[in-house]
Amino acid sequence: MFTFSFFQKSEQAQFDDFIERNALDGGLLQGWLWGDFKGRFGAKVLRVGVSDESGRIVMAATLLKQKFARFWSILYSPRGPVFALDYLNDDAGKKTILDFFLSEIATWSREEKILFTRLEPSWTSIYFPRDYLAAFGFLRSPRAIQPTHSLVLDIRQPLDSLLYGAKQKTRYNINLANKKGIIVRHTSSVLDLEVFLRLMKKTSARHNFKNHDEPYFREMFGIFAPWGKIYFVIASHQGVDIAANCMLVFGNTAYYLYGASDYEYRQLMAPYLVHWTCMTLAKEWGLYYYDWWGISGNEPSGDGAGDLREKDWEGFSRLKRSFAPIAPITEYVGCWELPYRPTWYKILRLLR
Image (cartoon, rainbow, N blue to C red; front, side, top):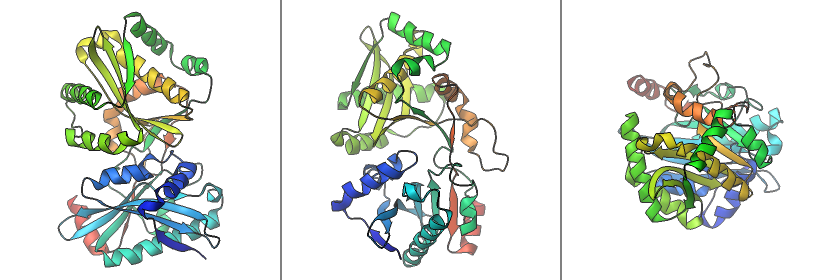
């Protein structure tokens, strides 16, 4: 017998504690602060949970109610829902809990004009087949929202092991940046937010790709900075800031989400030293993992299920992989949609 409930603001610590202890990716996008952040852009944020007879939480999720087309909304859970870890090897238990969760969500959705629910969980092939959600009526989404592949590096190993786990050329570039007098600082200052934004503009223009606009990063800073969960790691040379990473922290994981650099100073190899500093800082803070975020996979999935953006990430991926060339790539089950109004869903899917 399970119960379904909505978490209130006063239960933020309880919700985050469950996500931190049980999310397979560390839980950043399911955490309370990320929900608050997305709420700044028009989403109605719901935090829901499933509890067993004893009141123990066995599943939780952050759900974003977002406008979709003219008359409809959708529910989206980035990297959710999250199972309690002790259910991951319990196939019957997982099915029962997920059936109950989806039934409750469907009941609520009928009253809210929800066209479909989109899940993009942090489930990996160790515990879930890639088509696991198909058995529950889900269809694979035409596109992924979050990266399908990531490089999640265990940083609990000795620092020397981390360094010598990198490619020789990467170690050379780190040493070169040091020899060239690159100085790296880490900060949560609003002044260095401006440094990061300036470098991000240069990087976006150089690579001709569309990035988030300034209000996006300013809102992110406004949400995470008061909690000490966002850091800018910035490299300077002779007083000029030339490279920067934006790093978020949740639970036992540091996440590298965004990086930027000044191409004029490319010969100094500053980004390599910045990344190495991010990893060493995370280790000093007692964190367990450094998540490099999106990365191109080892090979195409073969079923049309891959993230098409990954072909554009090959350059970024080479740099990331150079720090951990033999570490396994994490592959998630992907993005799936459960339609509640099949006819409308089919029409709108054709138009997407």
